[in-house]
Image 1 (cartoon, helix red, strand yellow):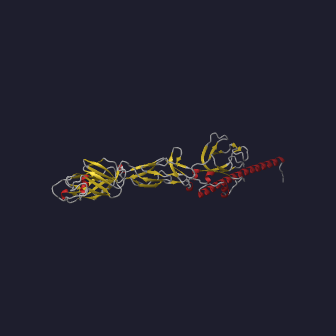
Image 2: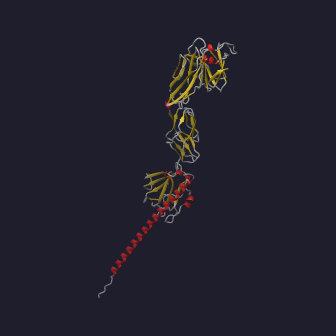
Image 3: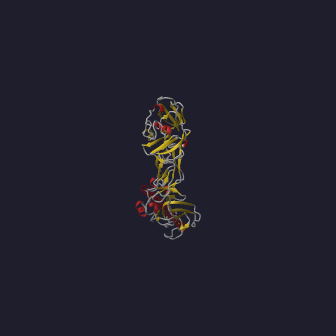
Length: 493
């Protein structure tokens, strides 16, 4: 058998091939190990971020540096270097702020004159120096003043944080951050906010009102104010239509939407009160300006006829009564059912005319009728009794007043009811035209041709009753020229 061995050249070639294969294998193995460490570090960074979020969402604040070290599982990356934690110190009290001190810029080159992207209001950053074991971004710690942190695209030759290795090399830091907006998805981290779509309770004209503006987020207590264009002025609060906004967010007062209408009535049967330019500040100093408006719907009071009793008519004398109404709108429709004395008529809420005179004592029976008024789809009705006084039925006799036998030249009216105010006037075409100033009502002297208007308020704006001299004389049955007034009703004195 012919045996042949390797020549030296062949043996050398085999050894070279084996060396090349071994070298390639070692290089590939190194690359694979490095890639595995990078991936493992990314997982560590992600896990640390999740740990911070879990703590934040449960406590309503982000951890400080000492708390961070207790809540994360891995404080070092896969290369054995400490994980870097950068955070806004203002959020360690509460995460629901409106702004932070941290801004991130994504840089395409070392100069970073034109950032690829700018991210504002960053809550915290977690990073690793990467495979080159060099933190090229920033150091750990809390930030309490406006700070911009630059993060470079991979491969840029830079050293943005020379306090670590102080060497320029290709950037490979592994960085992850969370913005304030991302924290706001959790209820405990909600920022200060006023919902412009919230519904305030409806209001009724000339009645007390109280409602609270709802605020969410921020930190109690809240203070409301007026937006002055740049900030929330808590020394000034919105007011209008008889209402005002308190510093703690309550709208209170007595609604006075329609100042020209009757008590409780609203022109057009309703309206809207608009509240604008309000703002709120929380205990941390954050402010929220409501750019939209809040609206209160205003409705009139239920229609009600205030006139309770009618003064008697006097035979042969002029008679005029106006039925006073509150609530509804600016116009009323009227309906009359029943009977009136001859020559008296009802029109548009008034009875007027001259009572027909006859000879002798006719002793007319009382007249019964019902008055009904409607406004804004609301109706009120009330029944009345009208008595006609016939002087021929009053016996002659002396009196203790300024006249006798029904010949009083004036009637003195005494107020025996609640506090009232009055004005004396003159009768013109069945109207009482005031001619005196508003005075407190204890007694008043009314002469022939004059009339008295009684009011319930000291400015003489809310009329309770109106009587002419003839009507007053009809109640003076004992002919002493004196009658009593008691909360809208007359009686002999």
